Length: 94
Length: 285
Image (cartoon, rainbow over all chains, first blue to last red; front, side, top):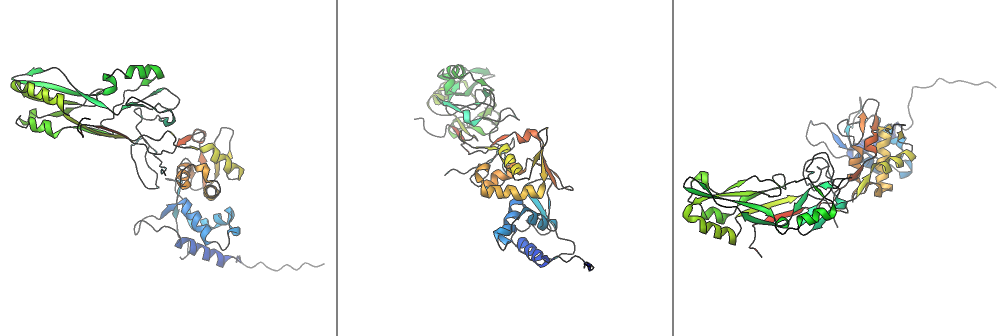
Protein backbone atom coordinates (compact mmCIF):
# COMPACT_ATOMS: atom_id res chain seq x y z
CA UNK A 1 0.00 0.00 0.00
CA UNK A 2 1.35 3.30 -0.91
CA UNK A 3 0.72 6.16 1.38
CA UNK A 4 0.48 9.40 -0.42
CA UNK A 5 1.55 12.24 1.75
CA UNK A 6 0.05 15.51 0.85
CA UNK A 7 1.70 18.65 2.04
CA UNK A 8 -0.04 20.26 4.93
CA UNK A 9 -1.50 23.56 4.14
CA UNK A 10 -0.79 26.41 6.48
CA UNK A 11 -2.95 26.12 9.54
CA UNK A 12 -6.45 27.23 8.79
CA UNK A 13 -8.63 26.07 11.56
CA UNK A 14 -12.04 25.16 10.29
CA UNK A 15 -13.53 27.02 13.26
CA UNK A 16 -11.74 30.28 12.59
CA UNK A 17 -14.99 31.89 11.54
CA UNK A 18 -16.65 30.59 14.66
CA UNK A 19 -13.83 31.90 16.85
CA UNK A 20 -14.12 35.37 15.34
CA UNK A 21 -17.90 35.40 15.69
CA UNK A 22 -17.65 34.24 19.29
CA UNK A 23 -15.08 36.89 20.12
CA UNK A 24 -17.22 39.61 18.54
CA UNK A 25 -20.26 38.46 20.45
CA UNK A 26 -18.43 38.26 23.77
CA UNK A 27 -16.91 41.72 23.38
CA UNK A 28 -20.32 43.14 22.70
CA UNK A 29 -21.69 41.47 25.82
CA UNK A 30 -19.16 42.87 28.26
CA UNK A 31 -19.59 45.93 30.46
CA UNK A 32 -17.93 48.84 28.59
CA UNK A 33 -14.83 50.66 29.82
CA UNK A 34 -15.57 53.10 32.62
CA UNK A 35 -14.04 56.02 30.71
CA UNK A 36 -12.69 56.67 27.22
CA UNK A 37 -9.04 55.67 27.11
CA UNK A 38 -9.22 53.94 30.50
CA UNK A 39 -7.98 50.39 30.87
CA UNK A 40 -10.83 48.04 30.11
CA UNK A 41 -11.33 45.64 32.99
CA UNK A 42 -14.41 43.61 33.75
CA UNK A 43 -15.41 41.22 36.52
CA UNK A 44 -14.17 37.75 35.64
CA UNK A 45 -17.63 36.33 36.00
CA UNK A 46 -18.90 38.79 33.37
CA UNK A 47 -16.45 37.33 30.85
CA UNK A 48 -17.57 33.78 31.58
CA UNK A 49 -21.24 34.74 31.46
CA UNK A 50 -20.79 36.59 28.15
CA UNK A 51 -19.06 33.49 26.75
CA UNK A 52 -21.92 31.28 27.90
CA UNK A 53 -24.52 33.58 26.38
CA UNK A 54 -22.70 33.67 23.03
CA UNK A 55 -22.54 29.93 22.57
CA UNK A 56 -24.82 28.39 20.00
CA UNK A 57 -25.51 25.60 22.44
CA UNK A 58 -24.65 25.18 26.11
CA UNK A 59 -23.34 21.73 25.20
CA UNK A 60 -20.42 23.31 23.39
CA UNK A 61 -19.19 25.09 26.52
CA UNK A 62 -15.89 23.90 27.88
CA UNK A 63 -12.96 25.19 29.84
CA UNK A 64 -10.71 24.54 26.84
CA UNK A 65 -12.96 26.53 24.54
CA UNK A 66 -13.14 29.36 27.06
CA UNK A 67 -9.38 29.23 27.46
CA UNK A 68 -8.91 29.53 23.69
CA UNK A 69 -11.27 32.50 23.58
CA UNK A 70 -9.36 34.27 26.33
CA UNK A 71 -5.96 33.92 24.66
CA UNK A 72 -6.78 36.71 22.21
CA UNK A 73 -9.22 38.56 24.36
CA UNK A 74 -8.12 39.03 27.94
CA UNK A 75 -5.36 38.78 30.47
CA UNK A 76 -5.46 38.37 34.23
CA UNK A 77 -5.34 41.36 36.55
CA UNK A 78 -2.58 40.95 39.12
CA UNK A 79 -4.17 43.64 41.26
CA UNK A 80 -7.52 41.89 41.52
CA UNK A 81 -7.84 38.23 40.56
CA UNK A 82 -11.62 38.64 40.34
CA UNK A 83 -11.21 40.97 37.36
CA UNK A 84 -9.64 40.62 33.90
CA UNK A 85 -8.17 43.10 31.45
CA UNK A 86 -9.77 43.04 28.01
CA UNK A 87 -7.12 43.26 25.31
CA UNK A 88 -7.14 43.67 21.55
CA UNK A 89 -5.79 40.67 19.72
CA UNK A 90 -2.77 41.50 17.53
CA UNK A 91 -4.17 42.51 14.19
CA UNK A 92 -7.60 41.63 15.37
CA UNK A 93 -10.67 43.70 14.97
CA UNK A 94 -13.88 43.93 16.91
CA UNK B 1 -35.29 39.54 53.02
CA UNK B 2 -31.93 40.65 54.29
CA UNK B 3 -29.31 41.42 51.76
CA UNK B 4 -25.90 39.94 52.19
CA UNK B 5 -22.98 42.25 52.27
CA UNK B 6 -19.44 41.71 52.49
CA UNK B 7 -17.32 43.94 54.58
CA UNK B 8 -13.73 43.24 54.08
CA UNK B 9 -10.90 45.28 55.58
CA UNK B 10 -10.36 47.11 58.79
CA UNK B 11 -12.31 50.11 57.64
CA UNK B 12 -15.81 50.63 58.86
CA UNK B 13 -17.95 51.05 55.80
CA UNK B 14 -21.40 50.00 54.66
CA UNK B 15 -22.00 49.92 50.95
CA UNK B 16 -25.08 48.83 49.07
CA UNK B 17 -23.51 47.72 45.79
CA UNK B 18 -22.37 44.24 44.89
CA UNK B 19 -18.78 45.45 44.93
CA UNK B 20 -16.33 44.51 47.59
CA UNK B 21 -16.75 46.55 50.75
CA UNK B 22 -14.80 47.08 53.97
CA UNK B 23 -14.87 45.00 57.08
CA UNK B 24 -17.44 45.55 59.76
CA UNK B 25 -16.94 46.78 63.07
CA UNK B 26 -14.24 47.74 64.45
CA UNK B 27 -12.32 45.41 65.90
CA UNK B 28 -11.20 47.65 68.67
CA UNK B 29 -7.97 45.75 68.10
CA UNK B 30 -7.11 45.90 64.38
CA UNK B 31 -6.33 42.58 62.76
CA UNK B 32 -8.73 40.56 64.90
CA UNK B 33 -12.10 39.41 63.62
CA UNK B 34 -15.26 39.69 65.70
CA UNK B 35 -17.23 36.48 66.16
CA UNK B 36 -20.77 37.74 65.72
CA UNK B 37 -22.24 34.30 66.26
CA UNK B 38 -21.30 34.63 69.96
CA UNK B 39 -22.78 38.11 70.44
CA UNK B 40 -24.26 38.61 73.94
CA UNK B 41 -26.94 41.21 74.62
CA UNK B 42 -28.14 41.98 78.13
CA UNK B 43 -29.45 45.06 79.93
CA UNK B 44 -28.39 47.60 77.30
CA UNK B 45 -24.96 45.95 76.95
CA UNK B 46 -23.78 44.29 73.73
CA UNK B 47 -20.63 42.17 73.86
CA UNK B 48 -18.99 40.73 70.74
CA UNK B 49 -15.95 38.51 71.33
CA UNK B 50 -13.03 38.08 68.96
CA UNK B 51 -12.81 34.75 67.21
CA UNK B 52 -11.39 32.08 69.46
CA UNK B 53 -11.36 34.33 72.51
CA UNK B 54 -13.60 35.70 75.22
CA UNK B 55 -12.11 39.15 74.77
CA UNK B 56 -13.89 41.84 72.85
CA UNK B 57 -15.64 45.22 72.92
CA UNK B 58 -18.69 45.96 75.06
CA UNK B 59 -21.05 48.54 73.55
CA UNK B 60 -23.87 50.28 75.42
CA UNK B 61 -27.24 51.37 74.10
CA UNK B 62 -28.24 53.48 77.11
CA UNK B 63 -26.34 56.29 78.74
CA UNK B 64 -26.91 58.61 81.70
CA UNK B 65 -25.42 62.05 82.09
CA UNK B 66 -23.59 62.40 85.37
CA UNK B 67 -22.31 65.81 86.52
CA UNK B 68 -19.16 66.08 88.58
CA UNK B 69 -18.64 68.40 91.51
CA UNK B 70 -18.07 72.10 90.90
CA UNK B 71 -14.53 73.41 90.50
CA UNK B 72 -13.38 77.00 90.58
CA UNK B 73 -11.58 78.62 87.68
CA UNK B 74 -10.84 82.20 88.62
CA UNK B 75 -14.17 83.91 89.15
CA UNK B 76 -15.98 81.21 87.20
CA UNK B 77 -17.23 77.80 88.11
CA UNK B 78 -16.87 74.63 86.06
CA UNK B 79 -18.84 71.40 85.92
CA UNK B 80 -17.89 68.37 83.82
CA UNK B 81 -20.86 66.27 82.71
CA UNK B 82 -19.95 62.66 81.86
CA UNK B 83 -22.05 60.45 79.61
CA UNK B 84 -21.75 57.16 81.43
CA UNK B 85 -23.31 53.79 80.47
CA UNK B 86 -26.50 53.25 82.42
CA UNK B 87 -25.51 49.61 82.95
CA UNK B 88 -22.52 50.77 84.99
CA UNK B 89 -24.61 53.13 87.11
CA UNK B 90 -27.17 50.38 87.70
CA UNK B 91 -24.34 48.02 88.71
CA UNK B 92 -25.24 45.54 86.00
CA UNK B 93 -21.88 45.58 84.21
CA UNK B 94 -19.74 43.64 86.70
CA UNK B 95 -22.23 40.78 87.16
CA UNK B 96 -22.54 40.57 83.35
CA UNK B 97 -18.79 40.38 82.83
CA UNK B 98 -18.32 37.87 85.63
CA UNK B 99 -21.21 35.67 84.54
CA UNK B 100 -19.80 35.26 81.06
CA UNK B 101 -16.10 35.46 81.78
CA UNK B 102 -15.80 38.53 79.57
CA UNK B 103 -12.49 40.29 79.04
CA UNK B 104 -13.49 43.81 78.06
CA UNK B 105 -11.09 45.51 75.64
CA UNK B 106 -12.57 48.89 76.65
CA UNK B 107 -13.53 50.03 73.16
CA UNK B 108 -15.37 53.33 72.87
CA UNK B 109 -17.87 53.88 70.05
CA UNK B 110 -16.36 57.36 69.63
CA UNK B 111 -14.84 58.82 67.58
CA UNK B 112 -14.84 55.94 65.08
CA UNK B 113 -18.60 55.47 64.95
CA UNK B 114 -20.16 58.75 66.01
CA UNK B 115 -19.91 61.97 67.96
CA UNK B 116 -21.17 64.00 70.88
CA UNK B 117 -22.38 67.57 70.74
CA UNK B 118 -23.73 69.95 73.37
CA UNK B 119 -27.52 70.32 73.14
CA UNK B 120 -28.90 73.52 71.71
CA UNK B 121 -30.57 74.13 75.04
CA UNK B 122 -27.36 74.22 77.10
CA UNK B 123 -25.66 76.31 74.42
CA UNK B 124 -28.53 78.79 74.60
CA UNK B 125 -28.46 78.83 78.39
CA UNK B 126 -24.75 79.75 78.42
CA UNK B 127 -24.62 81.72 75.18
CA UNK B 128 -23.51 84.84 77.06
CA UNK B 129 -20.22 83.19 78.07
CA UNK B 130 -17.05 84.20 76.16
CA UNK B 131 -16.11 82.06 73.16
CA UNK B 132 -13.41 80.12 75.02
CA UNK B 133 -15.88 79.30 77.79
CA UNK B 134 -18.74 77.97 75.74
CA UNK B 135 -19.99 74.41 76.35
CA UNK B 136 -17.32 72.12 74.93
CA UNK B 137 -17.19 68.39 74.33
CA UNK B 138 -14.16 66.60 75.74
CA UNK B 139 -12.76 63.21 74.84
CA UNK B 140 -13.37 60.80 77.69
CA UNK B 141 -11.97 57.48 78.87
CA UNK B 142 -13.95 54.28 78.60
CA UNK B 143 -16.64 53.58 79.67
CA UNK B 144 -17.62 57.26 79.53
CA UNK B 145 -18.63 58.00 75.93
CA UNK B 146 -17.82 61.69 76.12
CA UNK B 147 -17.84 64.60 78.53
CA UNK B 148 -19.16 68.15 78.42
CA UNK B 149 -17.28 71.03 80.01
CA UNK B 150 -19.48 73.85 81.33
CA UNK B 151 -18.21 77.21 82.57
CA UNK B 152 -20.56 79.69 84.20
CA UNK B 153 -20.61 82.52 86.74
CA UNK B 154 -20.93 81.41 90.35
CA UNK B 155 -24.46 82.75 90.60
CA UNK B 156 -25.55 80.42 87.76
CA UNK B 157 -24.62 77.19 89.49
CA UNK B 158 -28.05 76.34 90.79
CA UNK B 159 -29.65 77.02 87.43
CA UNK B 160 -27.06 74.96 85.57
CA UNK B 161 -27.35 72.02 87.97
CA UNK B 162 -31.10 72.18 87.75
CA UNK B 163 -30.88 72.19 83.99
CA UNK B 164 -28.53 69.21 83.92
CA UNK B 165 -30.79 67.34 86.29
CA UNK B 166 -33.93 67.82 84.22
CA UNK B 167 -32.91 67.57 80.58
CA UNK B 168 -30.14 66.35 78.26
CA UNK B 169 -27.13 68.58 77.79
CA UNK B 170 -25.30 66.19 75.46
CA UNK B 171 -26.43 64.71 72.17
CA UNK B 172 -24.76 61.38 71.38
CA UNK B 173 -25.23 59.90 67.92
CA UNK B 174 -23.29 56.76 67.03
CA UNK B 175 -23.82 53.72 64.81
CA UNK B 176 -21.58 50.71 65.30
CA UNK B 177 -21.62 48.50 62.19
CA UNK B 178 -22.14 45.07 63.71
CA UNK B 179 -23.28 41.97 61.84
CA UNK B 180 -26.16 39.59 62.40
CA UNK B 181 -25.13 36.63 64.54
CA UNK B 182 -26.52 34.43 61.78
CA UNK B 183 -24.25 35.95 59.12
CA UNK B 184 -22.98 33.09 56.97
CA UNK B 185 -19.35 32.14 56.67
CA UNK B 186 -17.67 31.33 53.41
CA UNK B 187 -15.69 28.11 53.64
CA UNK B 188 -12.70 28.59 51.36
CA UNK B 189 -11.69 24.97 51.73
CA UNK B 190 -15.07 23.72 50.53
CA UNK B 191 -14.72 25.70 47.32
CA UNK B 192 -11.12 24.62 46.83
CA UNK B 193 -12.06 20.98 47.25
CA UNK B 194 -14.86 21.30 44.71
CA UNK B 195 -12.42 22.79 42.22
CA UNK B 196 -9.86 20.11 42.97
CA UNK B 197 -12.49 17.50 42.17
CA UNK B 198 -13.10 19.33 38.90
CA UNK B 199 -9.39 19.04 38.12
CA UNK B 200 -8.81 22.79 38.28
CA UNK B 201 -6.78 23.14 41.48
CA UNK B 202 -3.98 21.07 42.97
CA UNK B 203 -2.77 21.23 46.55
CA UNK B 204 0.82 20.75 47.63
CA UNK B 205 1.99 18.94 50.72
CA UNK B 206 2.39 22.33 52.41
CA UNK B 207 -1.23 23.18 51.73
CA UNK B 208 -0.65 25.64 48.87
CA UNK B 209 -3.31 25.57 46.16
CA UNK B 210 -2.46 26.27 42.51
CA UNK B 211 -4.08 26.09 39.12
CA UNK B 212 -4.32 27.65 35.70
CA UNK B 213 -6.01 31.02 36.06
CA UNK B 214 -8.40 30.65 33.14
CA UNK B 215 -9.51 27.21 34.23
CA UNK B 216 -10.01 28.55 37.74
CA UNK B 217 -12.01 31.48 36.42
CA UNK B 218 -14.23 29.36 34.22
CA UNK B 219 -14.93 26.54 36.64
CA UNK B 220 -15.37 28.76 39.69
CA UNK B 221 -18.00 30.83 37.89
CA UNK B 222 -19.68 27.60 36.79
CA UNK B 223 -19.65 26.57 40.44
CA UNK B 224 -21.57 29.75 41.36
CA UNK B 225 -24.20 28.55 38.89
CA UNK B 226 -24.31 24.84 39.76
CA UNK B 227 -23.56 25.03 43.51
CA UNK B 228 -24.34 28.62 44.57
CA UNK B 229 -24.67 27.58 48.22
CA UNK B 230 -20.89 27.21 48.37
CA UNK B 231 -20.54 30.98 48.05
CA UNK B 232 -23.13 31.64 50.78
CA UNK B 233 -24.18 35.15 49.66
CA UNK B 234 -27.60 35.87 48.23
CA UNK B 235 -25.86 36.72 44.96
CA UNK B 236 -23.16 34.02 44.85
CA UNK B 237 -20.96 36.33 42.77
CA UNK B 238 -20.35 38.40 45.90
CA UNK B 239 -18.88 35.41 47.71
CA UNK B 240 -17.10 34.42 44.50
CA UNK B 241 -15.39 37.82 44.36
CA UNK B 242 -14.08 37.44 47.91
CA UNK B 243 -12.89 33.93 47.10
CA UNK B 244 -11.04 34.93 43.93
CA UNK B 245 -9.29 37.79 45.70
CA UNK B 246 -7.55 35.31 47.97
CA UNK B 247 -5.41 34.18 45.04
CA UNK B 248 -2.03 35.52 44.00
CA UNK B 249 -1.51 35.64 40.24
CA UNK B 250 1.48 34.97 38.03
CA UNK B 251 0.23 36.92 35.04
CA UNK B 252 2.95 35.58 32.75
CA UNK B 253 2.46 31.92 33.58
CA UNK B 254 -1.25 32.56 34.03
CA UNK B 255 -1.33 30.59 37.25
CA UNK B 256 -3.20 31.33 40.43
CA UNK B 257 -1.92 30.43 43.88
CA UNK B 258 -3.61 30.47 47.28
CA UNK B 259 -1.65 30.19 50.49
CA UNK B 260 -2.31 27.49 53.02
CA UNK B 261 -3.42 30.09 55.56
CA UNK B 262 -5.96 31.65 53.23
CA UNK B 263 -7.20 28.26 52.19
CA UNK B 264 -8.19 27.51 55.76
CA UNK B 265 -10.22 30.67 56.24
CA UNK B 266 -13.86 30.75 57.11
CA UNK B 267 -14.80 34.27 56.05
CA UNK B 268 -17.73 36.18 57.51
CA UNK B 269 -20.15 37.47 54.89
CA UNK B 270 -21.77 40.10 57.04
CA UNK B 271 -25.49 40.72 57.16
CA UNK B 272 -25.47 44.24 58.64
CA UNK B 273 -27.07 44.72 62.03
CA UNK B 274 -26.05 48.29 62.90
CA UNK B 275 -26.10 49.16 66.59
CA UNK B 276 -27.63 52.60 67.00
CA UNK B 277 -26.53 54.44 70.13
CA UNK B 278 -28.48 57.62 70.85
CA UNK B 279 -28.73 60.01 73.78
CA UNK B 280 -30.28 63.41 74.13
CA UNK B 281 -32.32 63.46 70.92
CA UNK B 282 -35.68 62.89 72.56
CA UNK B 283 -37.53 63.91 75.70
CA UNK B 284 -36.68 61.50 78.47
CA UNK B 285 -39.40 58.83 78.67
